Amino acid sequence: MIEAEFGMDWKEEYVVWDPACGTGNLTRDYKFKELYLSTINEEDIGIANQRGYNPEAVKFQFDFLNDPDEKFPEGLKKALEEKKPIIVFMNPPYGIANDIIGKKSLGKGTSMGKNKVNSDMISLNLGKASQQLYIQFLFRCYQISELYNNNFAICIYTVPTFLTTITGNKFRKLFLNKFGYKRGSLFNAGHFSNVSSNWGISITLWLAGKMDDRTNFNFLVKNMLKGKPVTTENKLIYNLDETISCSLWAKEYLKRENMILKPHMTSGLKIAKNYHMKVPEDSIGHIINNGNNVYSGHISSGLFSSIGTCGGGVIGFPVTKDNFDRVLSLFVARQSIPVTWINQKDEYMAPNTEHPDYEQWNNDCLIYSLFNNSSNQSSLRSIDYKDKKWDIINEWFWMSVEDMRELAEEHKFDELYADCRNFAGERFIYKKLPETKLSDDAGLVYNKAVDLVTESFKYREMLYREHPEYHLNTWDAGWYQIKLILKQFMLDDLKEFRKLYKEFEDRMRKGVYKFGFLK
Image (cartoon, rainbow, N blue to C red; front, side, top):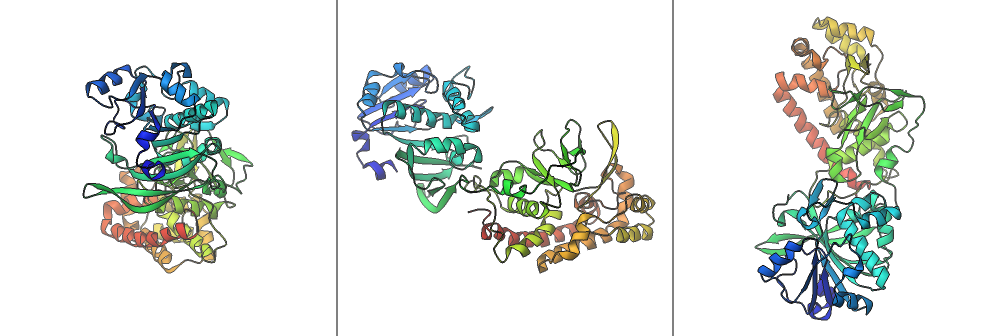
């Protein structure tokens, strides 16, 4: 990449500086005319010299995120002052809080993320990007370039999130005012020693100059074939700085009026005791919705009849009649896309609802949202929460109270029969279904679910007696609860249902790209 931009002799023609060199792994296989290697750890320099790495380099101990420019070697300071062409070539540590790759380069006793650069970024109100170490390295480059008016280039290994995340938008606005994107490659992180292969690392090349397009960045995806790195596809890395995210779009019409407390849940059956978020009185459920990219879509999204919690907090927003259709499409978009190391940083956008096929697809989202593995909608009675008894009504149930009463009477399940009387009233989903035109495959899934509720009823009271904590005595028990019966008594039928659902999901997945949730 650097050769393509600066020529084959760039190591002779340019001053090169690696400010996060560690023991010199990035430059050790090449010879440079004027090379500067700095590291926070004094012992790294000794190891690099002992191994004979880059003997031509000026190696010096330097805390890039804290130390003043006065500690620059004379040669580097002169190069900056004389505005010599410089390439900053680095692989800084990645991480925030206690999540870091490359801890060694930080040094013992370092409080990760808390440093002078962090303070400078906070003073400029750059948001959460201020906490991210590799972004701090980029910001320090920005500061040096501004101070010396030196238009140097940056070639850096990072995770690509600084180009994509909503929380990085303030930093991007600053950085992309100074540096323009030239080239980039994306490869599997597993090529680094002792690093997981579940995510991707990018190497990007930046030159001084503003960009016209600051939202789209074309990358080459690199894989190893027969021992050599080859380009296997093109990948668009993008951000939503000029458009609305799907998460914001989904709650646009949410009205926070007549707020009341409801029980908080960590799953369809487990109650979270220590939260007190309030929701609109007319809410019919809650969507967990953390982050806005493909990676977070699977680990941090779910539907609940009450208030869902995730990762030690309440993340997401209530579902009401006003935002119901949008919540369904958001849920399907987040759940139906498999996560890969290539797509995990892709951000979800507000879809094109004017597309002629969107309405039908959105109708089918209703069925998808009832029977997904992250659908935690359930019905519970007389549970303890905040020093009182609560009943959770499942507005997501898809059959009528009369149907369930007849089943209870047929199978002599007295507790469920009584529940039909005590908690009567048709649920929101059941009332909505007649006005919702379904595609054939969505209809097949729905009909199969109705059959399984009916056929499994003969086992329901038995499992309720064994496990009252499943609350199978409630007539509007959700799919989360029905699956408990199927797993124990009708596993083959459940497998058949899952096969049917997967075929349906494969078709629904195409709509995520067709309607523009993802580029």
